Length: 94
Image (cartoon, rainbow, N blue to C red; front, top):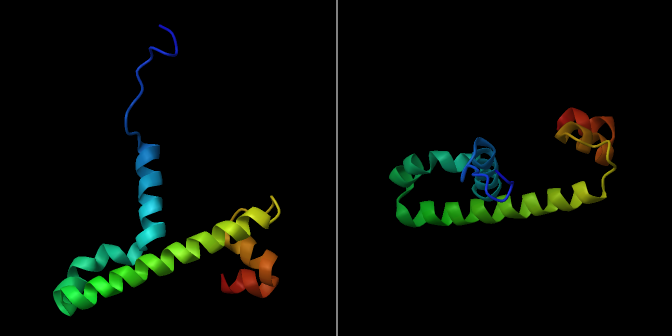
């Protein structure tokens, strides 16, 4: 059986992890509590809050991506990034 004919899984666990990470980057982990927010705030205010969360999280993800592109290859974690950008206090507060 050649590599071209080999069957591969359509959606693997790695795909699920990447999808969840992308969802969290766009909407934020707080969006998992949105049903209760809609119940408490109503559809109009909760929709405005959701749109704001999407904008803020997308903006932060884009800025973090741009910083990671210029950071040295030794920067691998948020703590490393904080230390690279702001010294030891950056690591402490991150």
